[in-house]
Amino acid sequence: MNIKILGSGCANCVNLEKAAKQAVSELGIDATFEKVTDYADIASYNIMRTPGLVVDEEVILSGRVPTARQVKELLAPLVG
Amino acid sequence: MSTTVEASTRRKSVQRWGILALAAGAWWVLYQVNKPFWDWMIGSVVGLDLTSRLGSGVHFFFYDTIKIVLLLTGIIFLVTVLRSFMSVERTRALLGGKREGIGNVLAAALGVVTPFCSCSAVPAFIGFVASGIPLGVTMSFLIASPLVNEVAIALLLGLFGIGPTLMYVGSGLIIAIVAGFVIGKLKLERHVEPFVFETKLRGKVIDPSTDLTWDDRIQMGIEEVTSILRKIWPYLLVGIGLGAAIHGWAPENFFATYAGADNPFAVLIAVLVGVPLYSNAAGILPLVDALYAKGLPMGTLLAFMMATVALSLPEMILLRRVLKPKLIAVFVSVTATGIIAVGYLFNAVL
Image (tube, rainbow over all chains, first blue to last red; front, side, top):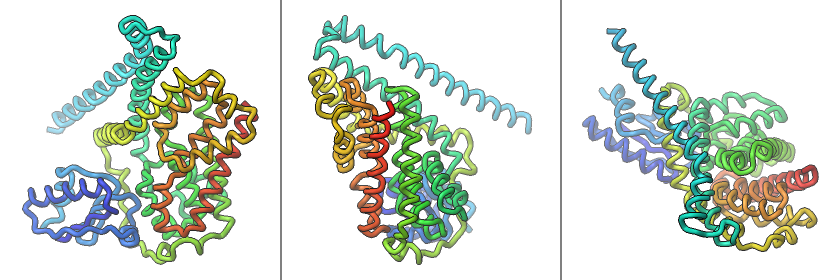
């Protein structure tokens, strides 16, 4: 699974990455993390509020920092 | 089975609204006892004369700090919960295909009600322009959003009442509409970084305003209150401290003599000072409150506050990623001109 954190390095992006990493380790998923900080790249995912969470090139969340539990709920159906 | 689920949902809902009602009640009581408490505390317990410089300054500091924190908590919470029904994505969909003119009016109004932080100004700008929304309409949104903000509304409402608050919201909307319209008419599209128009928007749009429960929305309200208070408390304390100093020590007619209604340059100077000043409404309004008490006219003060919150260097640096310097210069000067005009207008009619 490829997970991208979209955002230009603000505190929100760091928090989102933390939540996502925790969710991934709790679910025991094998995932690679990538940071997308370039505005043109971020915008091309059609999100208008950072941070954004992209899993296998699919936007699953934008505009808010979720808890690890919420990320788990979002990731669980995508596994397998 | 379904009846027990229903019963537990109902119990949860009763609990949720009960807690909210209790919190609202506690808020109201605190707000009411704030003044008598500090009158008693500073006047009787500490024993300062409330009409003396020191006494009135110290009283102003404590009373205003509590009052402002209470107002911010209440209004930010309410605004965040209400705004959770809106999103930038929905705003963009509503603006799609709108002509300039009507589009500017709608964009400014949506700029006020859409949950938006200027840290997302760049992706939002790209998202709007790349999906075909005219540059001027996009700018109306980007000007209205910080200019008419909930922190300023909360403080104006609490410190000056409904009249100045409506003046502020109304004039902020008009500035955003006119400035966006002018920028659109000037045909400045070539001063937008070319990559913005080349950006291809792919993938489905996620609308964060849907699929939220009341508990989510309330949670968002609480988080927003804590995050804003955490961010603005230094500004707030400096602002209230300066306000208290002016309140207690500045000579009665000092500011009125130099920046009063008689000085034709007062508004102009207030805006020129306000633009580079980097603060937010929470830092500026306690100052505005104290200056108003010293006889400065409302128009000058509103212009000063608007210039400070709407135009800031960090935002310009952020926008430089998508706008070329000339367009930023036009944006700043058109908006500043609008603010100056509003200041003179209010000074003239009030």
